[in-house]
Structure formats: C-alpha cells, structure tokens
Length: 277
Image (cartoon, rainbow, N blue to C red; front, side):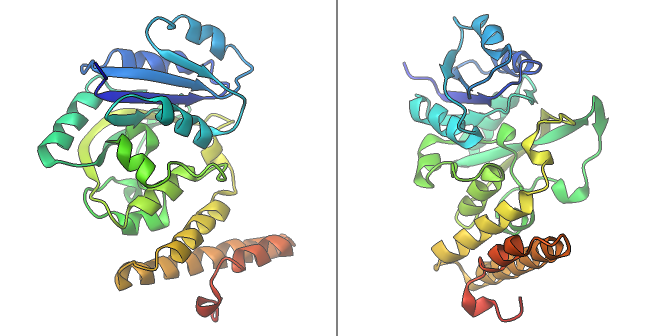
C-alpha cells in the first residue's frame, strides 16, 4: 500500500545535523509515511551517517544542484498523497504530522503549516511579531517576507506540481517564490502550535546571505507578469511591494557603486509601472 505522506529532507554537507532531523521524523506519532533523503552532493560525512538508516529510509545521492532541485526530485519519486518537507538543520516535534493531518482532513485543506520555535546559536529566541503565522488568505504576508516555513508545511502532492514545484533558477528565496505563487489562490491552514524547532546561526545557511531581496524582487516581478488575473486589490499591493523593494535594493547598489545591479533591478519593473521608480 502507498504511504499517506512522503517526507522529503534535502541535505548538503549537514553531517552535524542530519541525524537529528531524520530521528525527528522516525519518531513521529503518525507512522504511515515514507522518508526520502536527497543528498545533494555532500562531501562531508553525510553519506556515512545516512547509511545507518538505510533500512528505514530512501536515500538519493545526486550531484550538487541546489535545494530546489533536491526537493523537486524527492517529490517526483515520492508515493504519498501528501508531501512534507524538512530542512536538514531543523527538527520536528513528535506530533507534527498527526496534528497537521487531523486539521487537513477536518477542514478539507490542500496545504497547511505549523507554528515554530526559533533557536539561534543554541538558545531559544523570541520571533519578531511580523513572523507570527496566520491562517487563511496570507497573500499580504507573502509579499513582504517568506510567510511559510518549508519545514512546517504539509501539502497535497498534486498541488505542488500544479504550481510547477520549486523554481530551480532560484539559488535562494525559492520558498518565498513558491508560496507567493500559491498565495493568491489558496487557503493556508495553520496548526497554531510550535511543532518544529527551526535552528539558525550556522555559517552556511542560505537564509543568512545578503542577496535575498534580489531574488524576492525577481519573484514579485515574475508574478506580476504571469498573473494578469489577480484581483485589483492584490495586484495593487503586489505592485507597491515590488516598487518598494526595488527602490531599497537599487538605492543600496548605487551607493556601493554597483550600477549594473541597480539597473537590472529597476528593469524588473514593467514600463507602465516604472514612472516613479
């Protein structure tokens, strides 16, 4: 019989955390799942550590192509009705899948997430208020920041492919881009409990790089060009957010003397909206 849920962990050189992530899946109170770990070309001890779980999980070893390609590959080979992602430096609470599936079935949802607990450099920290998760129409949140955490999400497999999966041209902010594309159309469910531990402070984390706004601008521009059917209120909010982010990014690039980057950013504004940029 096919599993109800396919859990996908993409990983690259996370030998120090991959066992913790895998263990947090294998100890879930809900057990009808398969676990697929996509080793995205690791060169540390990741492969050796994963070999200890070889009789319990599926391991895919690939060349290093990035987290988007790793997640997409895991989804392509998965067999479950639902997909759950877990970053290899994060950890689930034992009832994470059980409580999400209960909510999904009760409300007939296609996607939901949970609240999260932040840990930075080994210590619990309070999240800024703007990162509080919300249920329902979250399009406005998805404009300003990544309002859905990949490690907390559970969604129908068919839904992921309806929206084309993660854009592999995005080296970072690929999650921001996907949820932004989904947000105009979907009700996002929420289990309002801290069912994941989200770790930070690692020097190699992509979310710590300064280029995030560049790719958020690209995602906003792509959505503006592709979704001519957006309601006026959402389209207006999208345009204003895009303009604001371009102004901030381009202004900073110009101060650094990077005129090419500034010009490229401004070029992502369609001409009809560019008069005040």
